[in-house]
Amino acid sequence: MSAAVATVLLCIGYLVFTIDKKQENFPVPVVLVLIGIGLSFIPYFSDVEVTETLIYDVFLPGLLFVSAYQFSTAALRKNAGIIGLLSTAGLGLTIALVGLAIYWLSGWFFSVSLAGALVIAAILAPTDPASVVSILKKSSPDKSIADIVDGESMINDGTSIVLFTVLSGMYLESNSLDVLSIIGEFIYVSAGGVALGVAVGWLLSKAVHITHHRDYQVMLSIILAYGAFQLAESFGFSGVLATVSAGIMLSWEFSHANKEDHYRESLSGFWSVVEPSLLSLLFLLIGIEATEHLEWSNWIFALIILFASIAIRFFIVGGTFKALAGRKHEAIWKKSLLISWSGIRGSMSVFLLLQLGTLAEGSVADELISITFSVVILSLIIQSLGIHPLSKMLNSN
Image 1 (cartoon, rainbow, N blue to C red):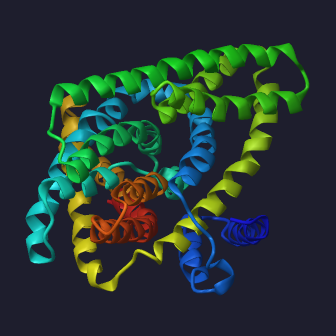
Image 2: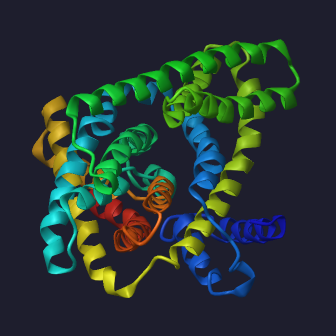
C-alpha cells in the first residue's frame, strides 16, 4: 500500500468519523467496510494488497494496546470470572458446537469435512468490540456488559490463534487431534505471553518516571505496545496476550502513581489520535479485501452460520452466568442476549482468514474462505446495526 493510498484512506476515515458523531445507528466500522467494498471497484485501489502480516504486526498491537490501556482494572477484577471462562473454556466449547452445526448444515449447501467446519468456527470465534463498546456504554444502563464484551475480546484473540493453528493443521495436513498437546501448547503460549507482558509493562511503567518530558513518555508507550508484541512472538508466546497484559499493567501502575493525570493526559492525547487512524485504515482495507472473496451464492449459508453461532454463544454465555452467579432467569437471558449479539467478528477473523489462504497455497480452501468472509462481513453489518435497537428494546421491558 503506497503512502498516497494510505493518505486518501485516512481522509475518508476522517470524514466518516467527523460526520458520524453519535456512532449509534450507523457505527463507524460498518460505514468504513461498506465504503471499502465500494473502493475496491475503483482502479486506483486495485493494487492495494492486504496481508496477514500487515494486520497482525501493524494494526493489532496498537489497537490491542489502546483497548487494554483504557480498560478499567477495577472492571477487570469485578468481571474476571466471566471474562476468563468465556475467553478460554467458553471459546473452545463455542468452536466445537459451531463447528458441529456447520458440518451438519453444510450438507444442504456444499460438502465440507468436520475439520473444515471446525476451522470456520475457529476463525469466527474471536470477537471485535470496536463497533459496539461505545454503543453499549451509551445505550445500556448495565455498564458491566460493555466491560465483559471488551475484556473478553482482548483475551479470546490469543486463545483463538492457538486453536486455529491446531485445527488448520488437522484440516490442511491431516494432523491427528492430541488434546494433551493442545492444552500444553495453550498453557505455554498464553502463560508466557501474559508473564512477559506483565514484566515488560511493569518495567516500562517505572521507566516513565525517569523523564518528565511527555514526548518521551509517549515514545515509551509505542515501544511497549509493539515491543511486547514482537518480543513475545520471538519466544513463541502470544503477542496478543503480551500486549494486552502490558497495557493493563501500565494502566494499573499509573493508577498508583502520584502523577496519574499527568501520565494519562500525554498518552491518551497521542493514542486518541492513533486509534481512529488505525481503525479507519483497517476497516477500509477489510472492505477492499473482502470483495475478492465474496460470492452471492454463499450468502444464504453464511447468514445461517451467523445466526446459528449467535444462538450457540447465547446458551454458552447464559450457562456461564448461571454457573458463576446463579442469577435470576430474566436478568441472565437479557444480559446474555446482549453480550452474545455483541460478539462481532472483525480484524482477528480477517487475519486468520488471510493466514488460512497463505497456508493453503492454492484452491484447497477457497470456498471455505469465501463462505467465512461472507459471515464476517454480515456480522459486522447486521450485528453492529442491531446492537443499539436491541439494547434499547431489552432495557425498555
